[in-house]
Each structure stands twice: as C-alpha cells, then as structure tokens.
Image (tube, rainbow, N blue to C red):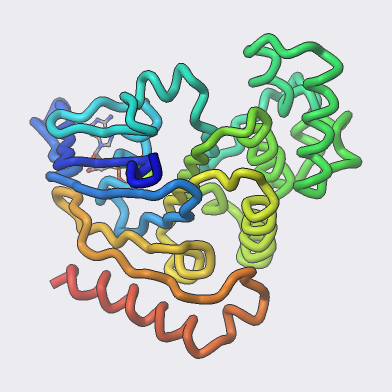
Length: 260
Ligand SMILES: Nc1ncnc2c1ncn2[C@@H]1O[C@H](COP(=O)(O)OP(=O)(O)O)[C@@H](O)[C@H]1O
Ligand SMILES: [Mg+2]
C-alpha cells in the first residue's frame, strides 16, 4: 500500500475541558506523514505539539476529525506495538539496571530472557552505552540516561518513534552530539522508523528533519511545512553550511510572523 501515509491527520481538533473552561489545543489539523520520514514539530510553548504527538500515540483522543496510523486507529496501533516513545525526562526505573530498563518492553511482551538480554545489549552498544548495562540510572549522566531511554524505545523495533523534546533538558554540546547519534541510529535501523520529534529549538528541527512542521498557537494549527533539502548523512559540517542558515532563517521568520 505505497500511497497510504503511515500517519494521517484529517481535520483533527482537540479541545481540553479544564476548570477554567474549554481549551482549544488543536484546530482542524490535516497532515500526512510517509513511512520512514523524520518529522520535526516546532512551535511556541502551548501550541499543541505534545497534544499532536499524544494523539498519534493514543495517549489522547481527538475531539473531532480522524487520526489513522498505518491505516488503523491509534488504539489498534498501540496494541500492535507500532510506537516507541521517548519523553523529555528519561523515565527510567531507579531500581533496575540500565540493561533491565531497556529489556522492560520485551519482558512485558513475553520475550525469552536470553533473547531480550541480547537485544538490550545490542541496543546499548548502538547508543554508546555498551559498558553500562549493569549500572543503575543514578550512576549515569542526563545525556546517558536519555540514550538509555532511546535504546528502550527502540528495543522492540517500533515502526514509529515519538519523541517529545527528548534533548530539551540537556546542555547544548551533549544535545548536538545526541542529535548526530540519533540520526545514525535512525539511518542504521532497517526498516527506518518514522520519527515524530517535538522541539522548540530551530537548529535542532532543521538539523534532524526531512520536513519541519511549523505550528501556530491558540488554537494549534499547521502554519507551514518546510522541506529540509540538506543532504544526508548530516554531519557536524551541516550546521555550518549556508543552506543550513537559510533554512534556519526560513523557520525563524515563519515563527516570528505569527507573533504579531
Ligand atoms: N490535559 C490537559 N488539560 C487541559 N489543558 C491542557 C492539557 N494538556 C494540554 N493542555 C493545554 O493545551 C494547550 C496545548 O498544550 P501542549 O500540547 O502541551 O502544547 P506544547 O507541547 O506545544 O507546549 C496548552 O494551552 C495547554 O495548557
Ligand atoms: Mg509539550
């Protein structure tokens, strides 16, 4: 089914009911995402980025419109384990070793012990934590913990990786390194997962994505979609290329135009 997008939003709206009255978080968002694409979602705080991601992952339900994932409901896709999710805070279990944390989804899915251990170690090597399987989360830096979270999200080879500001709490240097690592992990995965990456960093969005979806606030809508035609594999030098700066400016001006 080559023409069916892996993720499809058709006029999706989301209204939260809160004590202070209804909050329109998303308004008639239509969006098609192809299998294997790397999508960055960017926009000011409160514009509905997390809501959009949570609708894909079946963590929220739309008020109107339809969300389809692999031509299924998000609920079905979740039960089929189509998603791996990485949040801003690493969410590791303190009493489990790093390896046991990465094994957890496989354990819940009933994979045999040896098989899941081997898979967890393979992923830990992939994210540069091959020597830390027996360590506990508190023994790792924030960046290392987030790598472990990424390894865990990838453990069952999900076709969709949902990442909500996963590097938001890290320093700039660690962050740039993890961006590169994420791209190489993504490129090496076969098949490549579709990635939905929420960020409010313009350089991060442009560096990572095939397309940057710029959202406007109150209520959240898709303002513009900017194609990132930077060659892959992206490298340290990518950030210094004139085209990179041109694209940064394009995204920045699009965000600024909405402020008035
Ligand atoms: N569970 C909730 N209940 C009520 N309001 C919410 C809830 N989650 C988010 N919102 C509101 O919806 C809007 C969009 O939120 P969110 O999707 O988290 O934005 P972003 O991730 O872009 O910062 C905000 O105004 C936020 O306060
Ligand atoms: Mg958010």
